Length: 428
Ligand code: HEM
Image (cartoon, rainbow, N blue to C red; front, side, top):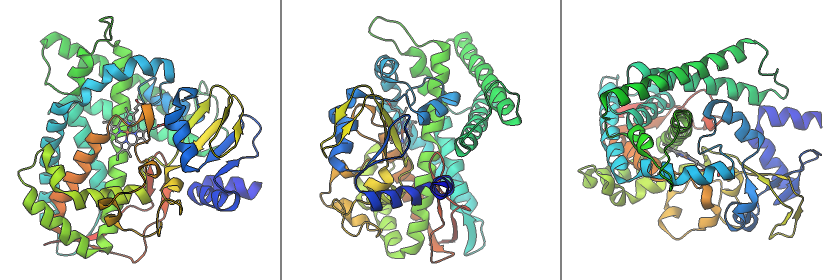
């Protein structure tokens, strides 16, 4: 048991993989409260996330930890609150938002192109750091418009500071209570106070000028439920923070791994560059002209799904299609990382082969964005950003590997390449 706990803490992906290989598609962990199940039977995963989704809420440790930063935003909200919020938040992701995302990605990719153009030939860069920075820029501009100084900058900084505490806390089995003024708790409290203050500032500014920038924040301010009631400042704060948390590192992680894979496959880079050349001018519709680039992004998320665990809590007892009974209150752990490697659904699951996404594939066994009613609201946003960013950069730069092995996959909030994503970059 001790060695199991050590592996869970140091290499959770290896632990999950090992547990599944040893015990099969549904495994009950030897933890009495709550009764905890790892579910990797594709039909049963679908049952929990889609078919009987009403029975499975989000009051789980994973989402409660995240809620220390995101409050009751859409990602961590349990079913009742979520039901009111989702239709109100949905308009923030409409077509004009995606058009603005395209413009922001063009702007951001241009900035990266500028920096990479001044590198020495074949210089080693950390693609992860570049993609993290770029993704923060994209989500920040989409939320707050072009001015990312002042309160907008404080909001993103405080969100990331708070998130770091939450990640560290998740790594330690017993955390000191939140009221104890430990350095971590003080950082978290400071981050939350900063967030509240900066959001109040930005809302006051928009109310004072009476006009916004047409960005996502404006759409959140304008949202009304079916009785005409808007979101409170606290709810707006929670959604903003949620978008930064859910929309920053996820896209960046997928892009960083994509660079590592592409570095090993020069032929795939050529194919993307060719597609990119024919896909201009850049609009939302360009995605349809970049099928291979998209397949690379998908195949990357198959092997390294940024959201590597999805948890649910069963309200009532239930019976899974794989013939396992769950008691009321059971904790369900679904891991896209495992499901995406299920040999019944994928041939040569460990092999990076984007072409598999150009042919029909098992959609139920591919859930990088979740499934069912709680499907990622930012899915289209992520495709626009991820696919375009890759196309725009690969068109002009060639990546080559610094090692013949991929970095160790370190699962934090998302799966991070340990030590970053070093690649050689040269102009094509
Ligand atoms: C590659 C990028 C992304 C990945 C892999 C990803 C993954 C996911 C997954 C797996 C879920 C469902 C979690 C669950 O069922 O428990 C989810 C939900 C969510 N995501 Fe994303 N996401 C990405 C990008 C984004 C972006 C760009 C945004 C916003 C700007 C965003 C905002 C959200 C929100 C608000 C939810 C909660 C939706 C709800 O419950 O109604 N995500 N995401």
